[in-house]
Length: 197
Image (cartoon, rainbow, N blue to C red; front, side):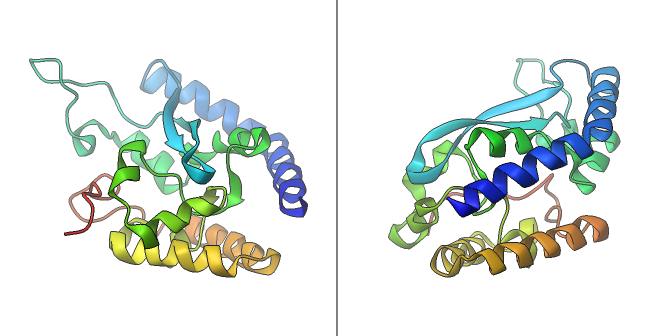
């Protein structure tokens, strides 16, 4: 309950404080990338319950001759890359926090199609509400292996506390300013998870 109160208070305050950035970003995205301004996708929340996550759009809708979307690294524009480097694309998730879909801190909500691929250990990351940032994000983000990422997520589940959350939030701000670990070489963000081999 205390974490929920903290989440709502901080998220609502951040929405108000960052409203000029949010509005300006929306206008620029509309102008440079077109509509829709928001990217919406179904993600698994706590215990795998689906919800719709919000992000600012960072890619074009370019497709091949058959109508299939081109790879992410092709559709990610320099403008979109800047939004990601500054983590501006994540700002709409503050509304997800207010709604109760996610927390400020927790394992990042991944794709629905990954759920059947988790082993028993990896499945434990679903025991808590996902977050905008998390222990894996401040310890490598997209620049570490899936195995390491999941191990860090489960470590957070076992050690979560208010002090740890505050520490992660501080490290997150530092990461944003340093613009580090945003992607892996050759990928717009990180490779697709294909399960354990």
